[in-house]
Length: 220
Image (cartoon, rainbow, N blue to C red; front, side):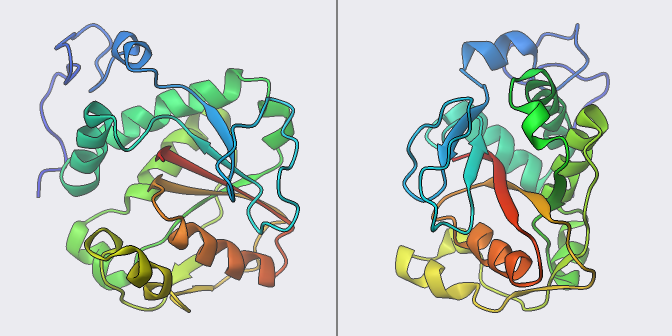
């Protein structure tokens, strides 16, 4: 398994070597990689005021940065997830910068980052947890603390290999806690499709005392 691609680093899109990262700021901007806030339940775009759209939703908002249909970022994320985690480290750095410099930062500065976990078996097989890599990189920029008490206790099928109906039941009772969770949590994952993984994690957190849950993904 490849965990580091090439050194020195260069942008995998334009081959720019100046920033010593696998994606440069210019290519991020050219591909509209920027912070967007949605209602988690209905996907409505939310303003910087963070007004709740659906009060009955266990997850208030989704923070995300590009769409799954964007082939450039889709390839980068999948390569980072399956082969080279340093791509996710670099994307996490830019995500952290976006959060830290946005008007939303003062509203989330008392939240904890919480990476969506893997089972021990899956972690050993892959060698790293992509959500953990992303959370660590974001935390290094924003200084938001990380909560690592959420665990995955059941092996499940890969969500990407299932149809919509199967995805909704595949993760039932797959998550638990080993520590008491914070009151405010930002769940971190690489991609949101149906949102089932994030909803199951949020369900466990809220059942055990978390009052507010926001989710953050690279792609939606």
